Length: 174
Image (tube, rainbow, N blue to C red; front, side, top):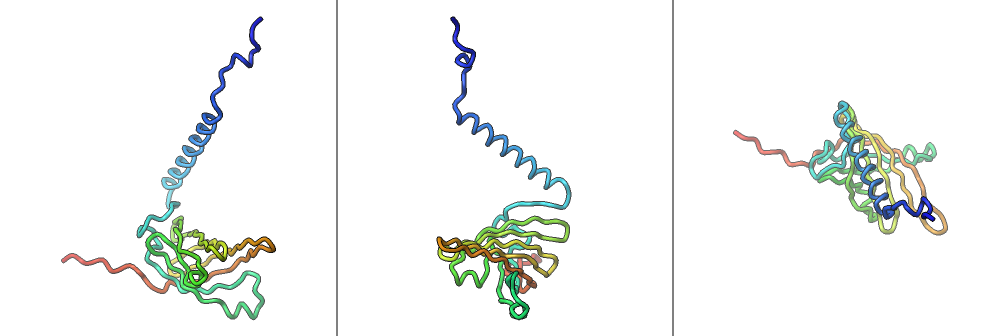
């Protein structure tokens, strides 16, 4: 009597299947990323230190809760948003232990889209997304702080204007 069909099959360990799946996903992501950079004027990448199109720029921004009443909308919170050395930071958030963090950009013709996520050991996470067109910045900031008795999940609107260039002027050759 011969052994059942299934016992004659040699099965690879499960990690081989998982490694194959991960490799396929990585190859697909690399191909997608390459197709974006070759398809025209749109590029997406994490910003390398001092290399991004926003690096070295600081914006004076006003921040208003998305659910603010009319009176609150007339009194926005002022902030300085900084893109420097591949990191994004918010002057107000630094007071609450939110650390600067890497930012990502996507350049789309004359628009620069950005994303950054700041975290604080005591006050949660702030996810910043926005678009810069010329000297104007517009976007949103989601503040999330999870606690056992309630979760803060608040959306804010951001509007800003270019304030200063942080990079030192490059020396001119004579």
